[in-house]
Image (cartoon, rainbow, N blue to C red; front, side):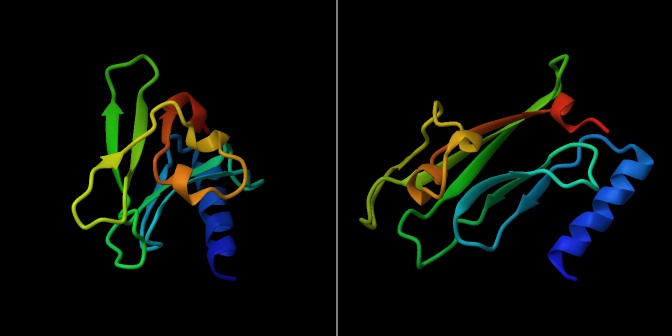
Length: 126
């Protein structure tokens, strides 16, 4: 039950109705995160962008900027994740555009808070 069953149920519906372009946007984990997983009930990999930077517990105070380009032959959405550069109250935030979120191995909260990920509509075809 719970999250896994819901994901399975949604995937079966997406597959049965041949719905393309489903992308999850989440929050409430007090950090940035990009997730991609395969699920046999889905016609394509499940992709999720998470950004919930309002947190007193995370010194990186992460946030994301999202760019959507529908004018391309293969429309895309790019998430630019940002993290604070220091624990100081007055700081700057940075993104590392050449650090691709889906290529980060293991758990690296520092890189996850500053990575970039582009998702194309062709990757979400039913």
